[in-house]
Amino acid sequence: MTDQEASFFNLFTCFAGRMASWFLCGSSLGDFLTNRVMKSPIKIMVDMPMAQLAQVCLNFNVEMQKSTGAMRVSLNGTPIDIHFLSDHPEFRRDLVYASAEEMDLARKNRISLTPKGLWRCQLSEEHPYYVQLPYLYGAVMDMSQPGWFVDQEHGPRNWRGAVFFDEARKRSGAELLGLILEAGERAGIRDAMWLGFGCCLGKVRNGGFIPSDNDLDICIDSEKITREQEEKYLQEIQKPMVLNGRTYEHGLCESRFQAPSRRGEGGRALWTSIGHRSIKHDNGVKACHWFWFRHGGVAWHSKGGRWVNEAKFNRAQFAYDFSKQALCLGIPESLVANMVTVDFEGVQVQIPSSSGACCDWWYPGWAKEAGGSSRKRLVMCVGQWEDPKTWTIIKA
Image 1: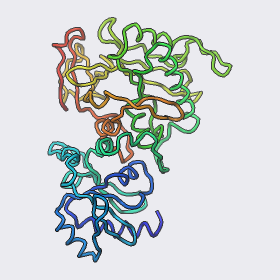
Image 2: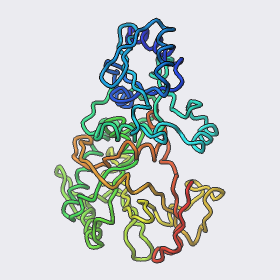
Image 3: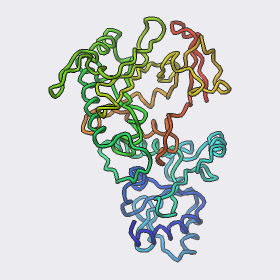
Image 4: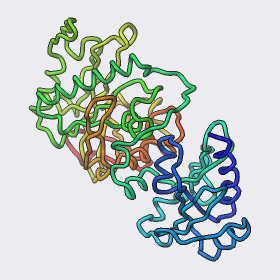
């Protein structure tokens, strides 16, 4: 950040602090989420009457001028376009502000929300200036600028934590992803394959692999493929192959293969994990596969019984029988109903067209880089896979 930019944001912080409720919107929100320098004019949304804004401008001795669908002010020569929330009914209050339940959870976890329920984020590690974001900012971007992440440029980030995906492992991960999609093509399921979780977040926020992530997250929509196609894919990934003069007798499962978890004895696949290169000796990457299914308006993924342990699920919150039940995690099926093709580390692959909203669901507050697995918001206990009457949905 230049001295001029620092001077502007110092004044902007004072100016914005006089407003009842405001947040970044439009291209300025997109610039912040992808760590780019905010382009002029800065765009913000305010939840206040015009007269109140006029008084703030009077106090700072700045003039308001009409701009396209907004009022424009200038601070230190930098224009700011101010939009009024009351003029934009598409910005629903449940998108903009956290609910009382979310506010309570935020207080317990010391999450940086304003008293109104907006995110409060430091502009950069070097400067103590803060901006505010709508609570579901990914969903807001999906709604206001559909496909905003598809060809988005990303600014550099100073990563200070542990790094798994260095340049060599990025190449290995991209190689594995391409080979997986080729196997999916041969099995006739490529159109049902997409990237989720950390890979989806990585594409949206970082432009590729998150440095601290440690795997590929391959999602397969079981509703769109047959049992025969599913089994063919599981065979394809185990077929011998030759790559760069080297023979892999077990194909993409040469170095790692976790036998698929299934929906009961001999049922449809739920999860498997594979990798052709050694993680320890050959910059290898593992690829977790999640075979999604739908129930009750929710898309579910699970490891079956293997997932049931205290490290993942606290029984004080999720009541289940360790020996008789499996647990599933869910997301509203509308968020993963449609896909868009993106470039991920040089590989063309699908991710949800509502990827911003998916990141909101899986990783609340995802603009700030932090570790940890996806949040447990919808959980389903499965008693008998063959009997949906024994499936119980819990809202966390």
